[in-house]
Length: 64
Image (cartoon, rainbow, N blue to C red; front, side, top):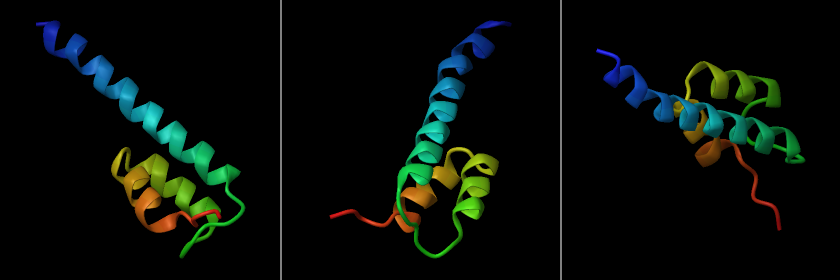
């Protein structure tokens, strides 16, 4: 009975780690595309991990 719960723990940890990575990246970049920074942060937190994936694809400004 506890096996599925124990098996889900690494997946949850990875998902939250990815969300934290996206938030750190969001606030370290000098600018973002399409939306304000605070709205990207809400999107990343509300829809883990899909919000982070959307931010990484559409919201990042490439630094040169």
